[in-house]
Length: 150
Image (cartoon, rainbow, N blue to C red; front, side, top):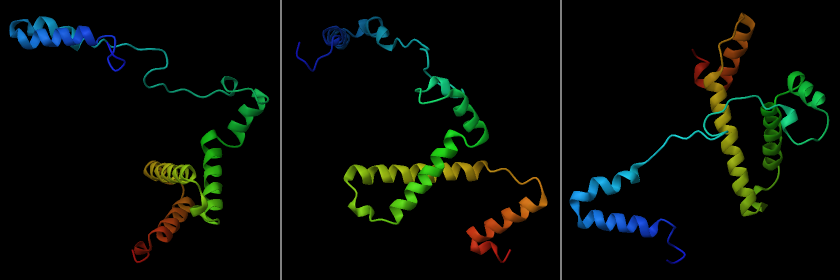
């Protein structure tokens, strides 16, 4: 057996060869190839949970982390601000001087920021009060100039 052949090569090739040469044995020999049990390993599949700071690397106080998350900004908001800052800094410099890895990372960041903005716009609820509605209308007219005549 060479290095490119896996541990089941001999068995599967024998079963397939026998199946091809003996059509009546086809069902019995190949049925085990379709064996597909449903297994749920820990942390496999969809898991929705809060990320508690105590589960992360210890860099300080859990109490500070929890208060910062509750009172200041979520991890997503913090990363969003850093992403906006980084994109602004890159825009004010010469991105052509970046390495190939840097250009690739910048493209990924731009794509992620665009996708997140799209999701936010799709899920943005309608305002609850008239002042917020006026602000939304103003923002929409600024973003879409063709709406100014409407």
